[in-house]
Image (cartoon, rainbow, N blue to C red; front, side):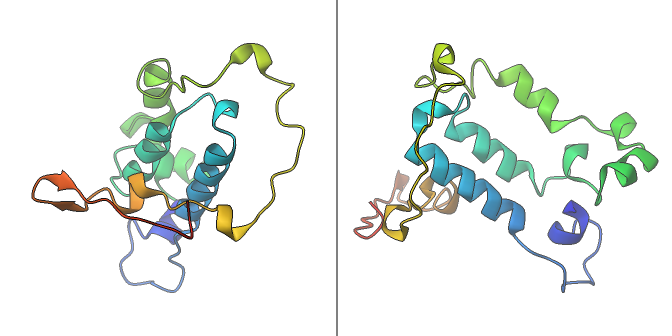
Amino acid sequence: MFNRRCGHFSSSDLSNRSPVFIQFLDCVHQMWNKFPGEFEFNIEMLLFIVENLYTCKYGTFLLNSHKERADAKTKDQSISMWLEINLRKNTDFKNPLYDPTKAGVRITRIPKPDYYQLRVWREYYFRFTEQSGESVSYKMDSCE
Protein backbone atom coordinates (compact mmCIF):
# COMPACT_ATOMS: atom_id res chain seq x y z
CA MET A 1 0.00 0.00 0.00
CA PHE A 2 2.60 2.48 -1.15
CA ASN A 3 0.21 5.36 -1.74
CA ARG A 4 -1.25 5.14 1.75
CA ARG A 5 2.07 4.50 3.55
CA CYS A 6 4.25 6.90 1.55
CA GLY A 7 1.62 9.56 0.85
CA HIS A 8 2.55 9.94 -2.82
CA PHE A 9 -0.71 11.55 -3.93
CA SER A 10 -2.27 12.67 -0.66
CA SER A 11 -0.76 15.21 1.68
CA SER A 12 -3.87 15.54 3.85
CA ASP A 13 -4.13 12.06 5.42
CA LEU A 14 -1.10 11.70 7.67
CA SER A 15 -2.62 9.04 9.93
CA ASN A 16 -1.72 6.16 7.60
CA ARG A 17 1.80 7.21 6.71
CA SER A 18 4.41 4.79 7.88
CA PRO A 19 8.02 3.90 7.00
CA VAL A 20 7.15 0.20 7.01
CA PHE A 21 8.77 -0.50 3.62
CA ILE A 22 11.98 1.22 4.70
CA GLN A 23 11.89 -0.87 7.88
CA PHE A 24 11.53 -3.99 5.74
CA LEU A 25 14.54 -2.96 3.62
CA ASP A 26 16.49 -2.31 6.81
CA CYS A 27 15.64 -5.87 7.92
CA VAL A 28 16.95 -7.18 4.58
CA HIS A 29 20.08 -5.09 5.19
CA GLN A 30 20.50 -6.71 8.63
CA MET A 31 20.22 -10.19 7.09
CA TRP A 32 22.62 -9.22 4.30
CA ASN A 33 25.18 -8.14 6.89
CA LYS A 34 24.68 -11.35 8.86
CA PHE A 35 25.02 -13.59 5.77
CA PRO A 36 26.62 -11.50 2.99
CA GLY A 37 27.41 -14.47 0.75
CA GLU A 38 23.81 -15.65 0.72
CA PHE A 39 22.42 -12.83 -1.40
CA GLU A 40 22.86 -12.40 -5.14
CA PHE A 41 22.47 -8.62 -4.81
CA ASN A 42 24.61 -6.06 -3.01
CA ILE A 43 23.81 -3.13 -0.74
CA GLU A 44 23.73 -0.79 -3.76
CA MET A 45 20.53 -2.48 -4.93
CA LEU A 46 18.85 -1.89 -1.58
CA LEU A 47 19.90 1.76 -1.75
CA PHE A 48 18.55 2.03 -5.29
CA ILE A 49 15.18 0.69 -4.14
CA VAL A 50 14.87 2.90 -1.06
CA GLU A 51 16.04 6.03 -2.88
CA ASN A 52 13.47 5.51 -5.63
CA LEU A 53 10.62 4.84 -3.23
CA TYR A 54 9.63 8.51 -3.15
CA THR A 55 10.64 9.61 -6.66
CA CYS A 56 7.45 8.26 -8.32
CA LYS A 57 9.64 7.43 -11.32
CA TYR A 58 8.62 3.79 -11.27
CA GLY A 59 5.05 2.52 -11.35
CA THR A 60 6.14 -0.18 -8.91
CA PHE A 61 5.67 2.16 -5.95
CA LEU A 62 2.48 3.90 -7.05
CA LEU A 63 -1.01 3.38 -5.63
CA ASN A 64 -2.04 0.78 -3.06
CA SER A 65 -2.39 -2.50 -4.92
CA HIS A 66 -1.70 -4.33 -8.13
CA LYS A 67 -5.38 -3.88 -9.09
CA GLU A 68 -5.20 -0.11 -8.61
CA ARG A 69 -2.02 0.03 -10.69
CA ALA A 70 -3.70 -2.07 -13.42
CA ASP A 71 -6.85 0.10 -13.39
CA ALA A 72 -4.75 3.28 -13.61
CA LYS A 73 -2.64 1.72 -16.39
CA THR A 74 0.61 2.66 -14.68
CA LYS A 75 2.29 -0.03 -16.77
CA ASP A 76 1.61 2.08 -19.88
CA GLN A 77 2.70 5.34 -18.29
CA SER A 78 5.77 4.31 -16.31
CA ILE A 79 8.41 1.62 -16.18
CA SER A 80 8.86 -1.07 -13.59
CA MET A 81 11.67 -0.65 -11.13
CA TRP A 82 12.38 -4.37 -11.54
CA LEU A 83 13.16 -3.84 -15.23
CA GLU A 84 15.88 -1.37 -14.24
CA ILE A 85 17.20 -3.75 -11.58
CA ASN A 86 17.28 -6.68 -13.99
CA LEU A 87 19.26 -4.59 -16.48
CA ARG A 88 21.84 -3.73 -13.81
CA LYS A 89 21.86 -6.93 -11.72
CA ASN A 90 25.01 -8.37 -13.30
CA THR A 91 26.97 -5.14 -13.05
CA ASP A 92 25.98 -2.51 -10.50
CA PHE A 93 23.98 -4.78 -8.19
CA LYS A 94 26.02 -7.99 -8.31
CA ASN A 95 27.32 -9.31 -4.99
CA PRO A 96 30.89 -10.59 -5.50
CA LEU A 97 30.55 -12.78 -2.38
CA TYR A 98 27.61 -14.75 -3.78
CA ASP A 99 28.37 -18.22 -5.17
CA PRO A 100 25.47 -19.58 -7.27
CA THR A 101 26.83 -23.15 -7.05
CA LYS A 102 25.91 -23.17 -3.35
CA ALA A 103 22.33 -22.00 -3.92
CA GLY A 104 19.77 -24.16 -2.15
CA VAL A 105 22.18 -25.58 0.43
CA ARG A 106 23.01 -22.37 2.17
CA ILE A 107 21.70 -21.25 5.54
CA THR A 108 21.23 -24.15 7.92
CA ARG A 109 21.12 -22.14 11.12
CA ILE A 110 18.55 -19.64 12.28
CA PRO A 111 20.04 -16.20 12.91
CA LYS A 112 19.85 -14.94 16.47
CA PRO A 113 17.98 -11.63 16.74
CA ASP A 114 20.42 -10.16 19.26
CA TYR A 115 20.14 -6.39 19.33
CA TYR A 116 23.89 -5.97 19.83
CA GLN A 117 24.49 -7.62 16.45
CA LEU A 118 22.37 -5.06 14.60
CA ARG A 119 24.24 -2.71 12.33
CA VAL A 120 23.28 0.83 11.45
CA TRP A 121 22.56 1.08 7.73
CA ARG A 122 25.17 3.77 7.23
CA GLU A 123 24.90 3.79 3.45
CA TYR A 124 21.28 4.93 3.83
CA TYR A 125 20.95 6.82 7.08
CA PHE A 126 24.25 8.72 6.77
CA ARG A 127 24.34 9.10 2.98
CA PHE A 128 24.06 12.90 3.07
CA THR A 129 26.39 13.41 6.02
CA GLU A 130 29.54 15.10 4.84
CA GLN A 131 31.95 17.53 6.33
CA SER A 132 34.23 19.59 4.08
CA GLY A 133 33.75 17.20 1.18
CA GLU A 134 34.78 14.15 3.21
CA SER A 135 32.53 11.56 4.76
CA VAL A 136 32.23 11.75 8.50
CA SER A 137 33.37 8.66 10.38
CA TYR A 138 31.11 7.47 13.16
CA LYS A 139 32.16 5.09 15.87
CA MET A 140 29.24 2.89 16.88
CA ASP A 141 30.59 0.79 19.74
CA SER A 142 27.28 -0.86 20.55
CA CYS A 143 26.50 -1.65 16.90
CA GLU A 144 29.77 -2.98 15.56
